[in-house]
Length: 179
Image (cartoon, rainbow, N blue to C red; front, top):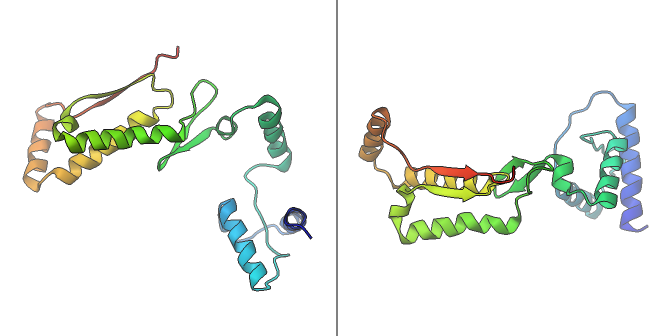
């Protein structure tokens, strides 16, 4: 039996078992984790017929979304309304460009620039045409992390006093020109 037909058989059995039982203890996992568990069970000759897979949406809705993806080339991120970028999960939709994996390097470039010239950490940063805001959020988180790492307790106290006096802290601006 090929892997695909074995997975289809497993999916059918899991769906059938789910329909028959009302309450279960569910353990969320990604499809990669599920594949690893199936491979491990296969190597150890453990039965998987009673395994259950809980879907986030009804099967008909998932099929409709998949058809949109295939026929109309709708980006997967738009269908799920989320995009994973670095360690963030961002909300996206048709009016917002999906953040690309290669743009993750922009935050790394900012970190390298700050490492070469620490004074840049106190300068304002701007992300023009921000779209989802991914680069602005990533840069702001970088600056926040660097600020916390580089400060002594005395500097933190001075910063708190400056904030109370209204002194500006490093800022990141996100400007969207799409409208």
